[in-house]
Length: 337
Image (cartoon, rainbow, N blue to C red):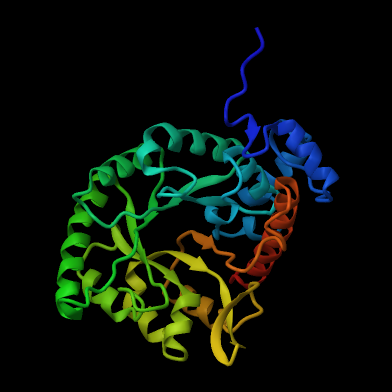
């Protein structure tokens, strides 16, 4: 009896088998083979050897580059993994949140499927991005347990907002209580829970507030997913001070670049390819080395991956791969040896 195709056998939103999807991708002009049973074993081995350290490039060092999977949200697990291998990545920072690759309500079913597809392609899955903020939410423990059982070791929390009704100080007390209780869960499930500093007016943007909440917590279980782009937006020339405060709690990093651009008479943030913006990566990685920060990197690409939203899935994938490849290579050139 012919086996019925499941959702992993088909490219999402296309009604096509993965083999049909791959053939059309090549026709669309990618000129890039995908992995699995679709390319020769020698090509798979070459990509795996490079990540393992037997080839040239980033694989020769301890640095591991993971792609924030939000950028391939239009692809299913297998296609996402295959595209990531071709783009030269070491792993994926998987979205496990509402609207993400894995929905919280389906985590027990879908996170193992995603993990299997990612690791089958030879990629790491040690990171995930969540919207976890409340230790009392029934989904929190469930997500952390499944992730722990699958060998995931780092997760990014959701964001906390300041409550204007009670002010900054009272808001910090509430946030501290929640993060302290999450720290207990993190230790129970052997996961590092990291809060990303994000430009704006949310908790964590100025960095001192994040330090005030977590400085006396065990950095093995609670910390910061340090985002240099956001730190420079908010800190300009003073960003090294915030990094120094948090250095012991930085166990993973988010990487991207930006410039200030004048649009419609106003100065606005514009995201740009790696190394083409205002972030002083030379100084940043000098400090990373000095502070002996060695955790995994989550590569964020916030500028357009493809020029037209109306493009076919194959065309979007081809364009996304080329764009991601560019930032991966640029980042490899910036990383310290």
